[in-house]
Length: 245
Image (cartoon, rainbow, N blue to C red):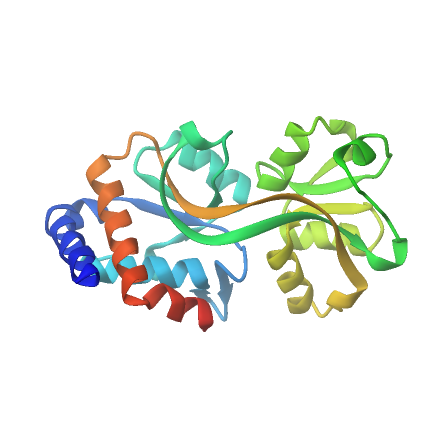
């Protein structure tokens, strides 16, 4: 009965919001396994979930309508342009008032990653702040924000243009550490032919959830329609099915 109540709510929102959902602009980045391109096709957990939301809400959108941008550009666009949706976005206290939120999508762990042969040990933020380690980040990414919140010297924080660029910086010894999602980093290592066993997470900066982040001026009906659809998909077991693929 509970399943059908969620479905009924979802269908109610779909009949009133489908046309408006078509007007939303969806933005993502290369962030495997959640969102990434392979053989020219956009794939991943979050992309599959969003495609299912499109289907449930009867919108005319498909994964081909999702725009792939570098994270910093996508983040700035979602902050400044009405009717934009950015994913997969870590929901944090600092970002809470900047967006409206639909989710959660999945749990994400952000760590400091090092080459194993460097034998680097970090037991606390104090250890990090008293060290001289150089740290790669992606601008506006959660890793960069966590380091800023921890008052890490910005002179030691080096922005990379992409996650693959940050990985190259770490692998070639141009930085000592990389602050990034553990799952995503290890996925990218494998995709680039590197042995994951040559790297290790040495300190956890945060554990939080990924969401769809909507521009704060987005009509609440649209936010509610997306959330109702996601809730219905979760109740039906569709989200679990997507996670297991």
